[in-house]
Image (cartoon, rainbow, N blue to C red; front, top):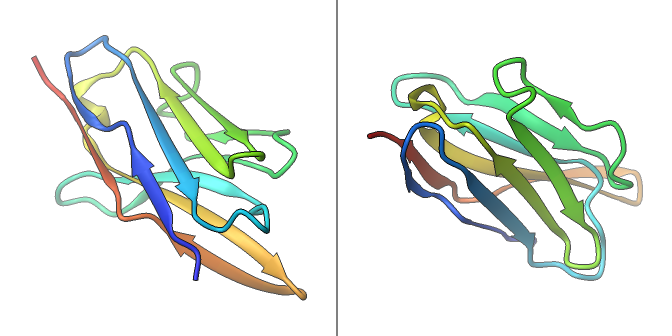
Length: 120
């Protein structure tokens, strides 16, 4: 059973920056796609960004393009989300997601979430 452990959330002022990290506990197999989602109070969980195993073709939600950057370190089985120029609308619980493919079967895992609050 893979565990995803997120860190880096917190309280930041508008215009500030935070860097989220998500480490996968299984070091023997590298995840395929890794992504970040977020869920604001009273709203559904939404996609934020994703990155493939080789780090190519990152994808972003329109609301974060140009402000957020997703990256990963396969040696550490860790995915990062650098968030700049944060606004109150970015306030949410941020969840890490990883998909593994083993013997042609897909396995999906979610982290426990980390709170990001943008407020003055």
